[in-house]
Length: 314
Image (cartoon, rainbow, N blue to C red; front, side, top):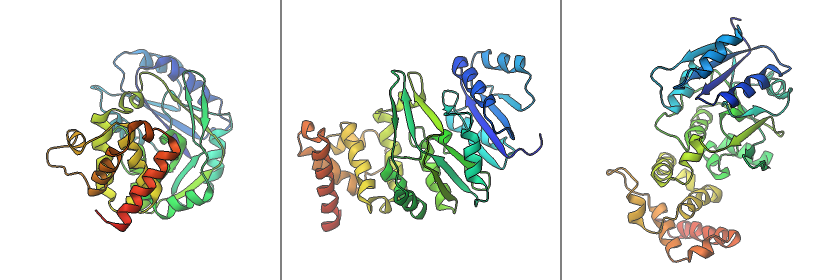
């Protein structure tokens, strides 16, 4: 297969049970014009041996020796793809139905080069499942002003929830782990990629122990410098929409940052917090932590802090 329409890109690491389930899930897809690219960061030989037994000619398997970072593995997987459209699938996420890939392809037909994504859905080990509403007005807002994706908390989801045209692909920043996906989306959209939304769950995204996501969630040493990088890169545009401001407000609250010095302690020595972040930390410092945990109260306080920046710019 020289030029498939879709390249299914699977950057994988160790999880042979999840991996087998994903390959079976892909084989059940009604759409068949695809290749499978696998870049394996595993220490064990389990996945390599399983691929050898399959003898599937649609699979291009590469073993990373030595292993590379998560972001580098994602980039390597995309770089080997020959398809017009690239579909990443993490080894622990799955298509929602046998028709999911076909629905992505149908949505791509006749579209300009860009990013197609479905309705975001999270699952966890306890069997809990949550779908996230996203209005067409918000989709249009992101398409017009990509930085506003921050204000949605990345309702585009991880790359498994997308289908991306090869002409708009940009490399993921391998130095990032928590915001690596939507930081890249913002760059692609800001460079002219079109954006299309399918209001249907097409991919089931799973969260469980052992994932990078679980490892870095609420990890101050990861989330503070990465979100500070995000803030600096797009400042002050990312403060113009209240919900983008509220994203940073909630990060400070959820990470339990109560002083400027505490925030600075997680930044590189040559980095200076933006005045807006200093305002958020100071504002929250006057509020009892228990009050900040009350959803409506926190939202009102966030809005008042945002207004204070409008009236009295930092």
